Image (cartoon, rainbow, N blue to C red; front, side):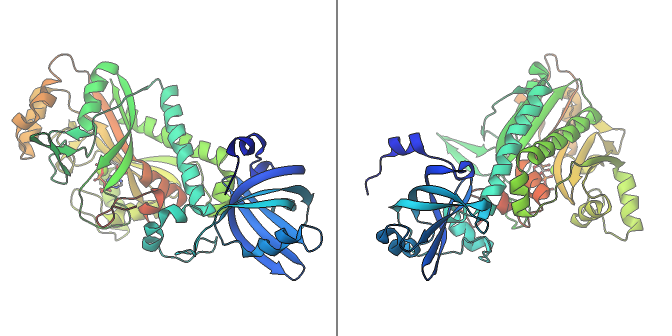
Length: 430
Ligand code: ATP
Ligand code: MG
């Protein structure tokens, strides 16, 4: 089918900008209806939805004939005149002079209407088609705002954006949940965190941030874990955990503010009532006491899933910072605070952990001691430890899961909803 793209792009109007006069639009067929002498086609593009209305005798016969026979999600071009109409969505409709089918859609394997009941796994099998849905597009329009807002906030804070390697020689945290890659004749791994690198950078560039992909070969199948996810990472020199918790709080508040400003329509479509979160600070001990009062089980030196959930119920629309965390359950690089506690923290938002962070150890001897205490070998971390031997200031930072934050902001039931093409244990395509 011949279609002059150059000419079309000179004339094209996005549907949201269609107001009056003669227009040329293109998009996907949402649905069609025939009511005797009048036929409707709902057309959508990324910006909106408009009704194409054909009355028998008032439009060319061939257009009237074809209008309700175009399959859903086919791509069509429409040229016509705009009329105001009380019944039509957006109060206007197009009376077509010309319609061209640019790409005919086959019978659809999943329901992509606004009222779709197709289950998530099936939707993900056909994610490219699932993304025709306005609600799904809304999630990723909001995610786009988030990514930009994070960068804006960090630049305003005086941060320097950095790029860090994704192929690493050994585990950054001593865990075993790594994907192995063949690196010439050596064994290497996909990064599960950029922790060690951003620390090295805080010791030279002072205030750095990154949007970083991480891979974790966790075998569990939960609604809050992915095998490939993205993180907002931040690290800063001359800071303790309280300085960076404050940065994190303002960062999330900034992101939410930008989403509220830019994505009103998308939030409405999703039925989400988003609020700029408040901030609350609690010690781990205070949380443990509170959970005891509420009859919620805690892990000995960690928050349980139930405890996170309870914090969300007790403090809605609040970022709850849990600090003075037991040393035993924080990674080796977290600065101790006395014998038993640490300068590590978690941030809980709407009942789920969105971030972990803390002040790091910048003293090589202390790092060696902590590695040994965790059953790790200092020699496996030699280049990392050595990086703190030539002038290392105290520093602190955090990593925040991008999809976790999005899931919590939009109250999504599954973290896979917050990724275009999620990778989990059973999913490698599309
Ligand atoms: P959790 O205890 O919830 O499994 P974690 O403590 O193992 O998370 P961190 O190493 O602290 O995770 O990672 C920093 C942040 O990255 C977390 O607070 C979370 O927001 C996000 N995150 C961690 N693991 C995943 C994952 N598998 N999928 C998606 N996001 C994750
Ligand atoms: Mg954590």
